[in-house]
Image (cartoon, rainbow, N blue to C red; front, top):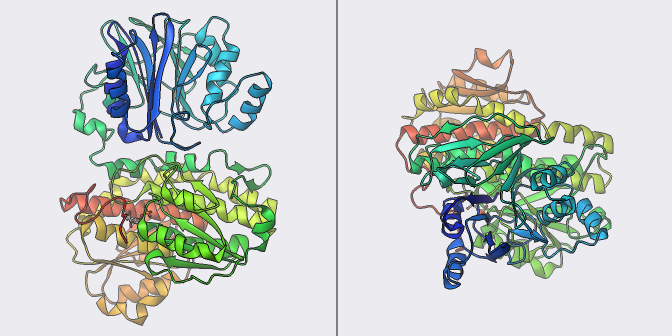
Length: 601
Ligand code: F6R
């Protein structure tokens, strides 16, 4: 996730671009850049690091530039944070800023290279600059329209040229808002950045081009026909706006999951070939020699690892050990072991330490992380980025479900390389998998019902979560979320384990959340707790005829493959803990005693 901005007006563009960019810093902050018209030419300033550093350099140069420009704050997905990879990217006298992922960029890059274009970054975005330049014959909007018709993927795009008096913007599956001022117009990825300047906004839609002049705004479709647009008046306050209208970052990030999952999958699935395209950093011959997988991680990431224990055995025939990183003891691992480190931040000291302990064993290592260039990526052969944008709320939500998606991709990738699953079976799984963002949206649409349930049980002194198979790690994760943000003591158990001790704690009125979307065996565990007076909150597949009869409360989810159902149950439990914490007045985004990135052992 990145932030893009633009300005066309009567004032100097630089200060406005910096100010609007700073308001988008929550979308990413590893590099920044601006491009402006300056005495009939283009002037580009960009660098790795924070926006404030770049702004200092701009001021030192005497605040150059005219009254028209574009800007970008980056959260790296393709290519590490560096000066070259920072946006804007240029081609001739064209500069672009881009938020999104160009899925066919390798193919476009090769073609443009053959046409004589040279690349100075590792990003997917740079192809857009060259492609627009390639199509530019005097009309910038036409060139943008032709270029994007060749692009697969997602984009919010702003384009500046010293030969055009308008900035041209386009979008597909990435947000873009135009702020309409008096004699000037603004662009930003999100409304908050615009509020100090204007409250009149137009939300660009997929398949539309915005041609933004100083005192005029034209919106066209891709074939150049004018499109009527709706101007919206924003009456939120700035604080609410930074969270996109949500009351907390956690709630915003929970709602970002359909998009985050799409980003994790983008460009990695071949439904036709029945395969997953991920570079592991070593050959498929080596993949075939792997006999065991060891996963190291902490907290929520550890729960993602536990889910992979079931998945990798089924999809790739590989037994998996999952270790809490701080307890990692496998210093004598056999060379045919694959070590997978899962860490959303990529900086968790316990996880880094476990990787260092394993390195003398000469084994292959993979990281799954959300942060490009984080320390974990320097300790492994290959990295799978989850690409879900910065997570501000301390409790991991979208980073967890994206880790699950990355593990599903990895499981299928390993299974296909080892010949454990057929292309046909993989294809079926992938087709179903690509429906996951839509299923997650259906769960989010049920939030009011989940809120009512959360409020009903918010006064409970303890909570239990039970699940079996793929749903056991999710029960652990549900309990962790409830402890972490609502401060209610909560236990997660494998359904079959209750009778071996914890059942003694179930008394009249104890809320027990049963994850019952798949598998029949959980039903006997449900009866065990009901017989002890528990209040049963059952999470079931839509249309389940049985559990409604024994449960106090039922939450229905869309029918999906068991592994996908685990993701849907996760989202339900995130909402349950969020609304419980809200009812109890907790400090949800910054729970007591916790930190987003734990860099001490
Ligand atoms: C819980 C949570 C933590 C982290 C853990 C590991 O919501 O966020 O349990 O999962 O501290 O962090 P990463 O994934 O950054 O290694």
